[in-house]
Image 1 (tube, one colour):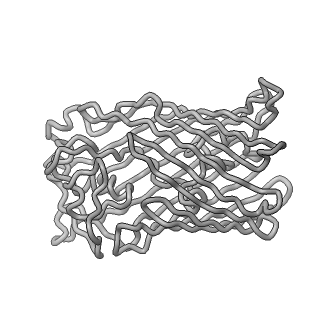
Image 2 (cartoon, rainbow, N blue to C red):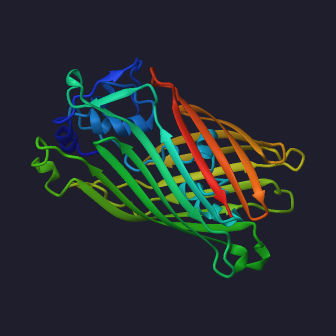
Length: 364
């Protein structure tokens, strides 16, 4: 939340405590010191959660955290979030909707993430056994294989939740198509895509905050917005093997404020990946991200071995190191499944054994 009155109202019902050593504070641009009091804020996920459960109105600095990309999809997370130029599975709507043109099967995928394991937060008075607050992410998606003369479509739901306190939900309708369907000379080298998104966020109030004027407009807010994406993947010539992705998110800068205007900033992602003919089993990737005037970089590496049965990956960004693995099995020519696991270790938060994401995908 960026509205400090809203933070103060929520703080009236929350007396958080933590288990574990959170380390030294690390102040980032746009992050209020009221949040930094209890944690280092190295992770944007923890910024968002603690903005909900910790923040008072000590400073007037804004916190730009709502609906921020915080690591969706076990496979992309294992690459440090460098997925804009790859985006070839059910996680594509989260990074680059144009990537849907690469999906050649119908896919149903579900992910669950347990964030910052070993780090416990409480709402209420922890000395009297206050409620334990967990940080969770969930993702569910269906992506179709290309439909003749129509293109690729998908529907997905992403959820971020702090138990009993705060949640964010994003429902996306996705569409993608090869530009070559309209400009034959481009063949299938260039794809475009878009997401039509519904954003919803809500705060759970109790008797001490339900009548607070901050929430006179309600404790829930929702809005619609649009993402667009391009994916360039030449299949011949000197650029064969290179992939270039570009995605723009939240293009309408929707208002997701409870009472005051609180606009979601645009985000731009530029991704580059390379798969050589000599080593097709090894793919390095890089994403450059700009959101609300802040630049970030994500780098990752993926390798598929044993006839694409076992996937290994590693990655890094400014907040965390990452690793992951996958197992793929084709049951028959019409059905298969894949299991993905992603693990991240934050650089600025101590006392946690990291975040764990597991994802299952069915192909048919």
